[in-house]
Image (cartoon, rainbow, N blue to C red; front, side):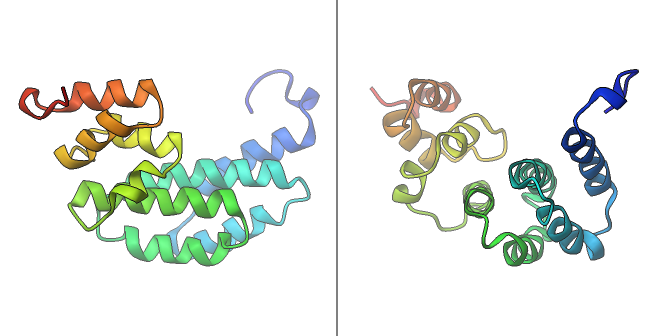
Length: 159
């Protein structure tokens, strides 16, 4: 955190900011060890939030590239006992499958969290007509259904 009142910030806020900065600069070789160290922080909620932000940033950067799979496997090892983080990483993998035209199922997408459905409906990367049509018709929220419908080519829109 930057600013004149840094000393007024709670210690976990300072650690959160420090962890985010450190994770942003970490090398691939040291990333898993650093994520594991962050997850050992005494404030589990803060640690999970920090790692969640890091996973979102890295997954978005690597999503359609060749390094995503190896990175996701390495992160899975580190976060396996953190339910939310493991779910988020699985959902990034589903978004990747949609984006690359790899196999996925309607049940995976319709059963996914609101976050993943919204990402799939609004992403400029995951724009398969199949996924957008499914979300336009069966997305969990009106926001997702509308976003997916707007992304569909006119001929593919559900009536």
